[in-house]
Length: 459
Image 1 (cartoon, helix red, strand yellow):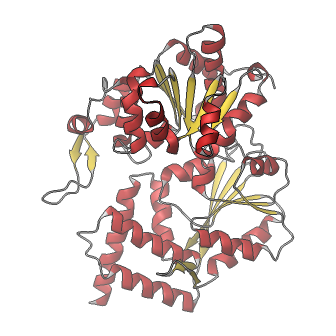
Image 2 (cartoon, helix red, strand yellow; image 1 turned 90 degrees about the vertical axis):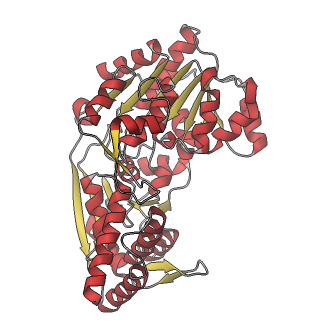
Image 3 (cartoon, one colour; image 1 turned 90 degrees about the horizontal axis):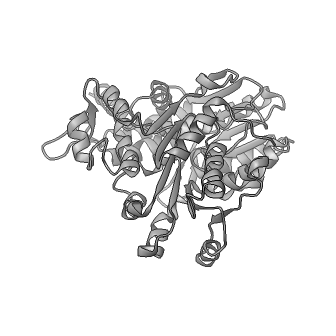
């Protein structure tokens, strides 16, 4: 396929070529991969400014997306992209193979840095989904920080740089400029742009941006980052949200209420932490979906109310293909069992071939966890219906997953179906996703409100 870049794509290509550090904060579907590979080819093949580029990506993206994209375009046919994946011996063999670029999954960044140590020889690094380096306490961030001085060029790619708030930006920008624009430490960044939020005597639980911080931060990084929205550059079909209420049966409602009471009435709303909030909401979301893990890690089915609503929706689609997102492993197992009764072609996404088969129309229902296919996959040719059987608190996962269908090349309006248990934790999650606020705060606030309501009810 011949690549004829849009003006915005050519602008981004030039930005990479002429700047040693740049963040492309491009919306999903704008072609970050082909932009980067085109610039990388120019730098390596024509200008001889780059010798050994490294691309760090989510695992599924590292397995297929970069190699597939290079094969797709005529001008990239001579590019050799080598994935550094698999066992230790397979990774070492890949690193010894001559290539125009090496692709490694982000989980192996620490290993790679420790392996090369002072012999680090990757002079250009591309962070595909740089938001996965937003935590300055993570091992991957600390490892890359150790070798940053040996990297001559760095490119960061993401469509969701601050899905949980402006704090997410500091670590990503630090890897670009060493702290020049937003401060050399996270603490100094917070001091300048934030005020402490919820806290007790010893711990600050979160920070809130000062008035005007967003504009000041945007101004500070505007010379090193390019930000573009898909709607500004592409004519995409509509994305329609379809909220499907799911009513629990009498027995299911009794079971849900009992679990909610047992879990939440044991917790003080004023001292609830993010860790305990995650555990509590996880159990309640499991029960919304119909099953819950026992203490022995066995899945115990409580009801099929959401399964029944799901099967009705599949019937209403009348053969139209559906990308289905599940949350827990027992969700996937129960969905597969329910779908066995149909004549539909079912697949659980696990490998690059699944993407190809879906786009070729060979799969009717593709089950996927949003964390496994939320980045890099192009699924727009295989269908235009997405069903959220199990919801996620992660705004980043939610938006990235939906964009697998709603992206350049999609010919039909994309319909996002949410199965929402009424008067359950599903409602709190969907409200938080739609408000696009701080998801951790929303999670904790939802629980606290629920706890207070239950305490009031039981007085």
